[in-house]
Length: 293
Length: 293
Image (cartoon, rainbow over all chains, first blue to last red; front, side, top):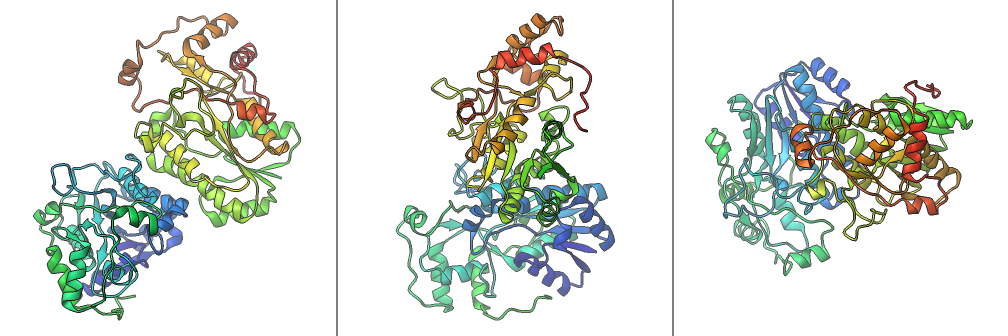
């Protein structure tokens, strides 16, 4: 029995959809049971959990700037909660996975490559260069160092074919002005499948960058959108990051390239980024698919 | 009615003692009500709180090294909890005070003076030079930036005349080997009185360095101990901080000088450090005083 923390959230809805579709029995753990280790332990026992997925966390709506105004919830959901789940899962000897984020990195490695799982975060409180959100996500991973039987799955800018305010493709199509930047991204359906597969395939525990191979610039995403014909509007861009920070953002954004070769080598399926984007755009719909909600 | 969070702790016991002694009605808030905002709000309402004191937090036993092994509890107690108390107190329009720590600083200011309340912490995650404990304490203060009707009282290495494993004087007398360092310190009875007085005197809300004026080196404390005659043992010192870090510590220690002139100017009573230490040593006792426990 899979127990899912945060099953009612955006990422959670994709875990629900996949598990239901694959006939894997799962239970959602109520939000009220998350932040008290005794209640969480009891809830996992009562659910008969054999594997735990933590996709609960605080993201900030409509974007990461909101986390600057809700630091307490952000620190609790992203910093403390993974640590608490670790303590409880270790006490029950349960394997588990934590949905982390690639936003704890910025740019590329000094050698020009994408960041691997061996590289320490470079966009965190420790570097004093980050948003509060990224800082708490990095602290969350810090609390999992040395954890037993734990997967850390790094999601990075989710996109998919169904319109949603959290979907990167919808963001690109609706933002008034765009920031040109290079990023690795995660196709959300592939992401949750790769997470579940990491347990099904019994790949080694540890950190995995769960991004589609490669990276892409915002302007290339826009070209793809126009080429596939989902939108033909005249996309506008900020002149540079300074203008973006001045006009549109309250806190620094992570733009980064991750290396997902560890996940690929472990046998997880992640489609190259341009192909994955094209597939999502070709299936683009504004209708929610009723993913086992 | 004063509501005290963390009333059963070491610092809390001194708040209890003072409030009882002064005939100020107070209630302790049970630990189980602390980490859920709804329960905390209800508990404060039911207590009829008019002023809230948060002296709950995670310190680590026997010392700050233990926080490196209990990061989740440390981040929850020192980082998240003050933010949660803020949210609840602001929603109830209650004035309150938070026992913070001077350990978010190291050394002296670059101009040679002690750190004032205007100086940003320089021993925190943001500088990537600190213990996990100091990092969480600094985050706790960060969550209180812009708080309404909130005192932030910085305690720094508490000492007093009653033997206790948390008492700096006892630590100095029992540690096998000492680290020579210069610090500001807080006489604990004066500290809690100054905290309570800040509310009674209605001094402006904000941060206060609640340390005894001045600073003192470990070797001078040892001289005082020998001079007053509480211990005449042959105190041993590490040759330098590197040896201390290598042999006795797992995580960096804060040693720092704070400027308490803001508290003094507001009318709070804090005795110069050498005099305060001498007074505590002259009253030295290994008997607990039964402070309203």
